[in-house]
Image 1 (tube, chains in turn purple, green):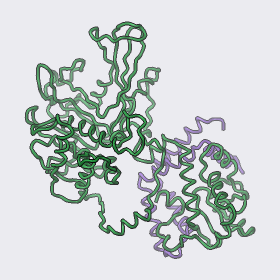
Image 2 (cartoon, chains in turn purple, cyan; image 1 turned 60 degrees about the vertical axis):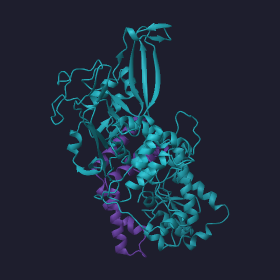
Image 3 (tube, helix red, strand yellow; image 1 turned 30 degrees about the vertical axis):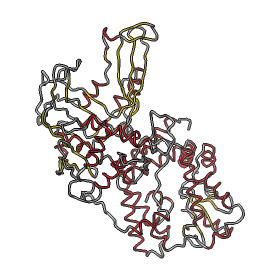
Length: 96
Length: 524
């Protein structure tokens, strides 16, 4: 593992330990609902299901089709806010 | 999609999949499988306690590549964590013939034989229970405020999507009529006939029926009446909501409501014009009293019950009296339903002169720079007031009567804040209406007026760290009650907000569309 992924793993561990990861997840969830992202993704999922056929579609199909669009559609403001929160958290728990 | 989506739950696919999951779970459901599954959820999926979180943080990495991302799954048959995205868990499943794995992020169960996530009713039940348990443990009252609308929800219960019970499905099938709420539908809007100077009641009723939390409470039928007689005002309120959301467009005649108000608040009886603010307080009081009778939870403090009125409207006002000699502070906190603000031009002292000069009415249409704002009024309300030599307070520190200053601040904010501008002056000398225009905002931040902010200032933190993401003290305007005319003969109307950004003017039986400008230009 290179230094970058080591750092990531360490940060991730700290976030989980302090329960911050759950809180961030909740914050993200709310933000994505508020900005309409969830509705957009829901509509897209429905399209994929219709395309593949209800009887045959698997979760994998959805994940593959929907993930790139999902990632692209996250508004910059949401990314910024999450980043700010993580920075603030790290500043507080600087022992990393 | 919310929680349902998180667990890979596709509501449309339920019809295709049997609720019993897939045939391959049967080999898993042996011995003490339920308890084992619970442990996996508690330790590695929804870690509620600090201990489990620590364990999760340390052990949840892929046994093959060490990554913690890539949709980690745990084998259900042995202790093995591996990435899904890189197919590491697939390799394990194949080589060990362990056909089931659980998604550590969302808790979904994957069957390698069926090559998809499966939904076994028993396992789903366990998953849901463990999730709820973990949430409760985490508490997080500060953050749950972000998720659910009642801000000060003390139980810490998170929002979960509604799944109908058998009984509810039955009811839905027997009552096929559905109402579709589109963005331009007028449901919830209804005029109220004036029964003879009853606009003071109508205007408040309009504001109450458009208070979202109150509306939700009544429309979800949460009032269980235990009053013997037919005189329960809460029941009548419930009925009123039914009328408002019935879809009828003709104005409603609130004669029963009026009668009940006369019965329970005799000071408001009679056909003369009454004060709308007095009606609001009287109505909240009666509703609170009638709710108390049916409060399912045992109210441990009889003075502060947990009825819907208290939950929504009650705030805490802190009064600090500081002795000028020993600087000892005596603090009391009183509950309040509204904040009554003095206006410039009133005969109460210490009001700084507005550019209007002698306090004569500023034309409601003009926006003179320097027009009094709501925050000006709040600032005045929360400023330290020297009580004067004629009003000395007995100081427990000095053991004698001393001069003191008094200051009011907000200790606890209500979910719905009612601001009352004291336009009607009833002093010994005169009775008049103060028509000074007071401008008010669409969004209001009460942080500067909080007791906690005052403490920060006193501790030397003059620059309050303004957290733009903290919405705890922020309010959105949703109703404005206006009075036109004089003290002797006047008329009340209300602006209310519908569907986030549409405003309507309610003038007794007549409802018209209004612009935000109309609302903000109004006297207030």
